[in-house]
Amino acid sequence: MIDHVTVAVSDLAASRLFYEKAFEPLGYRLSFGEEGVFWAFDIGDGLFEIMQSASAGPLTRVHVAFRARSHAEVDAFYHAALAAGAADNGAPGPRPAYTPNYYAAFVIDPNGYNIEAMIDAPSS
Picture (cartoon, rainbow, N blue to C red):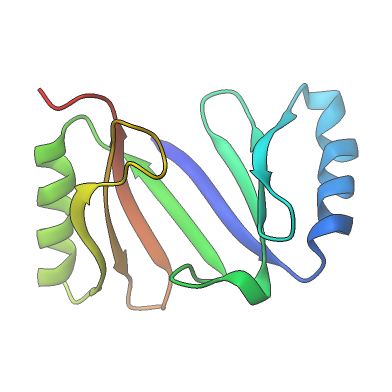
């Protein structure tokens, strides 16, 4: 399942207002973010995120994160993606800056998109 999708926007403040209003009938709400960098909206079983395009950093204009069931699955995804021609964008490992139990790997697919496999649970 998809955990979150991030898209780059040209005007973060205007996009935040747009999505706040557009998502209201669907019951989706702003969850967290950082002024001038990104905003995340809780859409039930995942997040829809918008980021200021100039602040992309290691992200690309489109970022998709897929949920894994274990750390081993994250590791296997990373190695399979590299073998299939992806470029490394972050080896498997903990990402405590996200949440205490976040474990992820990032690759750039053949189209230049940042694809992530992640799990947000303690190691088992």
